[in-house]
Length: 230
Image (cartoon, rainbow, N blue to C red):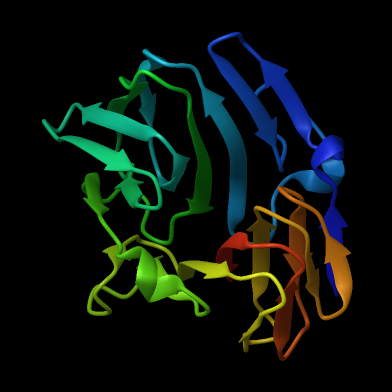
């Protein structure tokens, strides 16, 4: 099954400093048919104005992955962690038993990012945060693992049976991924692509399950972010 969720059908909230699109029900956006996808609970497509951001607020028992598309986001939390994550790189926070954090765009230009929440497999654990730069050439034409529940795979670690992957694909090229058909995949491309022949436009959501092989063909140069979850 390949279900396209068009960008213009997503939930929308514009707070001035934050222009957010919600792939799944979130805050004041409630759509019973889009409460999540497998263990994926939130996928927000955020545009954050220069020198603004999310003031300190709490979370618990959720794996929160931030994929920065353009600009940069600066993090600080109640554990004493601080860091800046730039375009193409990723940060993860396991909220565990509870953490308070803030996320600010301290740059002079707008920052765009995906904020992805995956249900934790280990509620009540010690909270943690991490970030990592990923060489852009490593994802040219192939999926690069960015975060997963395997602490030994060289990527960022989350407490969930899930993988977060990124790729870049030139126009006219294709890439394939072979999932367990029982898994839930969610893909967001930056440009028009075809997934097993089904067309998706820029920033559409693509919910996939029951497929043994997923082939993505790019009609234009595209950046792909994919989550593979239980």
